[in-house]
Length: 528
Image (cartoon, rainbow, N blue to C red):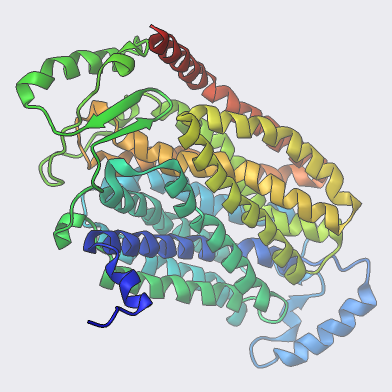
């Protein structure tokens, strides 16, 4: 018998379940990357919506005449100001651009609280596909303002609000789907790699938007809109919500797995005991958990068994019920400030680079992608460290502690030249996005499958929506505050970001203390 070709041998070395899991991992990665891809153009186009024309008036006039002739079939030259696109060509342009960010993010924050509750009551495939198609429509709608010569501020604000609402269908859906497929076997490293879709989407969105920003900025929105709409069709055709739908096992084979959610450490053990043996210990321990009077003795001396019911056999968790899960409130408030910092960079970094480095919109957009490259490594590093230490809160706290002085260094060093800016973009991206990535993925998944839920898999979407929704409040405030503060100087914006990092760390102190106490008690137990 002839030997199998290497390629076929590689394919057959993985089981059917493993191939399905790899497929879902890749598909959800691409689906959510397209969400971030469609959010990025506004930050790239800001440098084109308002241009600093006073310094080089003659050069800009010459380039404008050539530009007007080039685009004459599309729009009238009389509608374009030398200083940008009306109404963003005035001196209050930072406030107007901040209003665009705020309208999107405020709608996103409000919609997120409802999205998780709605999402766990509807088929994920339909819910996500419709959301992506609608997001493609409203993203492209913003760009159509260029082609139809629209200069009404409220047109762009309404497009941002509508897009913000429909984009809330994405995160709860993909986290729930990946949670269904990887179940209790998820690890911080794997979730950190998976969460790099955020940075990958930002990078692709920046490159696509930057390609057209200087010649036809409308396409900087239309093309990402088309891409996310196409991915919505792919979602409808290929997304498998649950392994049971294709007769796969619910979780990877394992005998015992341990998780840390920042509030408690617990072990899922097979085989499952019968109800009589587990009901009383579970009830008493859950009461201790919810009253916050535990001292880690349970997690050190016993194992808690999570019984998994079918996805249709449990009722959806209430909003207040999700808030009672230990750690949800603390991580939600921490994410509020962490996301404030991250989204301020997301929406204002290209304009900052334009002002400080005096680059055009395209080059500033390309350079800003380095922040997201650093974010990829930061998310993976955070997951790896939290796996090693088995301490989610402590890992986030350590990176937040380092992020604040790094931001101060970035504000000082970035004025020294392009090379220094490149280095600081990578470091800042890693430290800013690391905690954000860890909380929105591994921590949310841990909390969404907490032992107090008694195996209710339908709670994951609501818990994820609460955490990310609270974080989105900060995401809305950050760019708004940056727009209001930046006229007084970019240094003041960085001071605001450093204060936000300190607040994020403050909300984690109780959980960090609990993790350290658990570790000390565990060491003491091992000695005895």
